Amino acid sequence: MPAAPADEYRARLAARREAHARLTRLDAQYSYTRLAVFAAGVLVALAAWRGWIPPWWLALPLFSFGVLVAKHDRVVRARSAAACAIAFYERGLARIEDRWAGTGETGERFHDPAHLYAQDLDLFGPASLFELLSIARTRAGEETLAAWLMAPADVPEIRARQQATSDLTERLDLREALSLAGTDVRASVRSDALVTWAEEPPLLRGRWIRPIATVLSVASIATASLWMARGDSTPFVVVVLLEILFTLPLRKQTTKALDAADGPARDLDILALVLARIEEERFASERLTALQQQLVGAGFSRPVGASAAIRRLHRLVELHDWQHNPYFAPFGAAVLWGTHLACAIEAWRRVHGRGVREWLRISGEFEALASLSAYRYEHPDDPFPEIVDSPSRHATFDGTALGHPLIPAARMVRNDIHLGDARGPDGSAPQLLVVSGSNMSGKSTLLRTVGVNAVLALAGAPVRATCLRLAPLHVGATLRIQDSLQEGRSRFYAEISRIRELADLAAGRLPLLFLLDELFHGTNSHDRVVGASGVLRALVDRGAIGLITTHDLALTKVGDDLAPRAANVHFDDRFDAGEIHFDYVMKPGPVTRSNAIALMRAVGLDVP
Image 1 (spheres, rainbow, N blue to C red):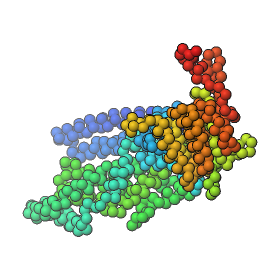
Image 2: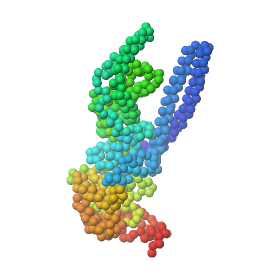
Image 3: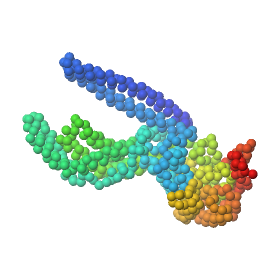
Image 4: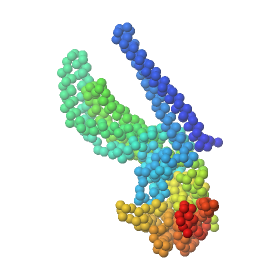
């Protein structure tokens, strides 16, 4: 029987901490040893200079120092990897133990106030659904996950994501390896700039440039050898003058080609960590196998793995760095080192440039699936929903024991929600639930619970429920509608504008799941009831399903008027020794009392 996720994480965390401590001790030992060998080398050099020993003895400390540098570098890199693994498992334990808020990427850059539910359902920002889910190490991965949360997928796509997520769930070693990309990866890989560089027109257009540069480089080496052998520098000087005449008109393009490749090459190095792991793994799911196959030779003139192509570009950029070495620079200038590298980089762009966009897409999709698989591994009781392929456009949301994944398990209260073609306790289900109740009783949380689980389901993720069955839906909400001073809009106007958008969406290809909080509470009771009755009737007539909340008991009449397509439910509370208590359990029928006066008195307001 496999270990529980928390136990497995703790065991691995202890092992990585032990490895980090051991590597830290090794790091110190190598540092002291290098210092000792360097000191010995200085003494040997001094002795050789004085003539006390043969000069070739200096080779021994030089060789030893080089070996130590190489081994020390491996130790430092292994220690950094152990530190990243420690952070990976610490954050995983925090997610399992509901301590994850503030430990991950919040995705605030995806915040869009005009989106129909992202702000209302806390998809992005501190302590958001995105922060809970995302383990992506690249911007492409974060962008893909965000896109999945913000738009419903179709049925085949949802099922493909579920299958791929299942395949990845137990691959803990793979997710750990992806975490080793480093802590500042998100700030490094700039997807738009990378694609622009890869696909922009060539800077060195002439096919004659590389052959002429090769001839001049060979001539430079030959004439330099002749100069050293016979002492005649004239041929070499002539070749150098020809090289200057050749490279001068190309200097601007060559410099731009070399400098422009530096940032993208480093970005691609980070991407290669993800791509290499995809290439190495053997997958069972069709989606992951297809992604893997697309990385090898897709659209290129010759088959080559994406990670191998990126390594070649990395080597070219490293060779360019040699030009900054003052000892190498004269030789590099003589053999047109920069021109050859610029031509090679431009050739790389011609062959692989159009693949960079695809590499970003594949790595982004893979990291998004890895994020969903991490959530599934860490929450084994959260099942995949059943997605109903309903060609007749019938709306279905049939959830048992729904909970909110952002609420700690110790405080979370689950409720059943049956809407549309679902089967409720009495064998049928309404399209609309009118949720009434007192302040802080859980009405808005219920709406968010339904919405977040719908978003997870339609993204291909597990859901916080015992079981959930639903058809593809559009989701729309008004839980965080606000006024705008800059746009001169009141909260009420913003609300009715959003509801108009939802009404139009309800007439579209997919049915609508609407979540309307305190419907029309910005107007008087009469207008609220009349307006709500008309809007909700229109939504229900268009096949939409949803929930509304209200403090206004007059609005519960809408549930009665639209029965059996609508039903009233409520949350209640009780006062005990001057303190208010909630059970957050949804009950049938409308609420029969309010706690507002009692709350005012409880905080010390002078209310009769």
